[in-house]
Image 1 (cartoon, rainbow, N blue to C red):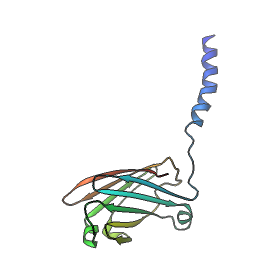
Image 2 (cartoon, rainbow, N blue to C red):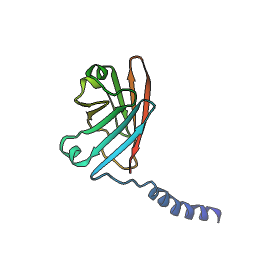
Image 3 (cartoon, one colour):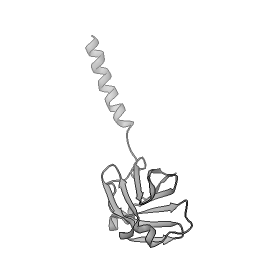
Length: 140
């Protein structure tokens, strides 16, 4: 008798638990934001841009400096981790757009599909500065 109840419980519980982990696919533009002691970061996923060119933008804002230079970018190494991939590089070698104390840079495929529930981890290392790890989540 106990086995029958256990079997019935599993029949109903497993499908219910599978439904509770359903994710919402990003079909337009979504911003994933995080903040550390020295940097703010925003990963912008634009579905149309991704479908066309397989890229997205990350914007970093330095909290300690009013102006970033190309020399500053040469010193910054990034590692961007997602559910599907890890991207690494040096900001000075990437396509960037500087504007005061912020820099935007292009990243390739981060996830094969992007969901609002995704988390991204950005690690920044630079000579003479402490390593910064920023957790980015969807910004409503």
